[in-house]
Length: 304
Image (cartoon, rainbow, N blue to C red; front, side, top):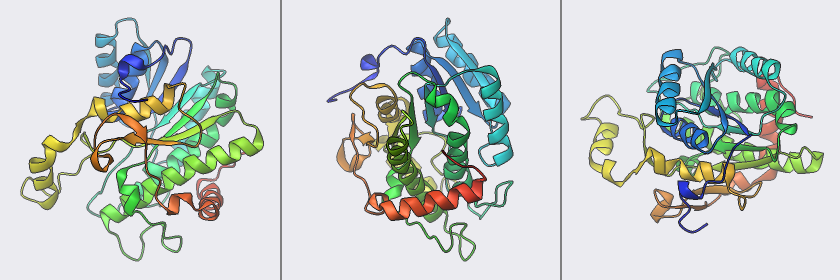
């Protein structure tokens, strides 16, 4: 694994991949997979950005098989509709990358279904999407699900008595909680898949800190977030480097189900991909099972 780069990414010819998110890391994932020969579906909520991402990929890879599909992860109806279109047009999916996210909106915004927006978009929408697509994934060839977490998961805490931040909203706390939930989901999906014989490997990854539009700019360049962007920007990885842990988890033969990958440099902020540190709460299997049961109820889905 040492020094793994895009040059080590194996051929993805004949594989169908779905990537959520049209910019930043999602774009880099889709571009790399298209270059490797995969049939790529880029899924996002903004058709104009989706069309632009597809055009950029086709410009870089003229023979790419890539398409955009509308998906708003903050709407469970949109998630179900997207999965229905996938099932109607395809008999299998080999790779699902649960990447799309929103980060630290300044106020407590709600999804179409009444859930706190970061919890809904980053976690619950992907939970529902995976449930809907599981039959297609089980018919895939060596199928994998890669779910994006974050270094922010280390400071995250699942407040089961206030998952929707109704008693008090702190933007970064809500973001950390959503990304901790993503990591716990990825690990619980692997455990349940092994127990049920689903044949689908579930892995998690995080990008360190990458230069993407997801990084908050606060209320402007003089805000705390804006100053962080200005003075620490040089420490952050380009998006293409930040995508490497995800691509390693998605494609490397040595990547294993249940594992968590991230940059191996100082603080896991940047560097070549390798095993990432798993926060204590993410190792709590009872909490993961509780989150799973609650998520099935909130999303109105069920796994086998």
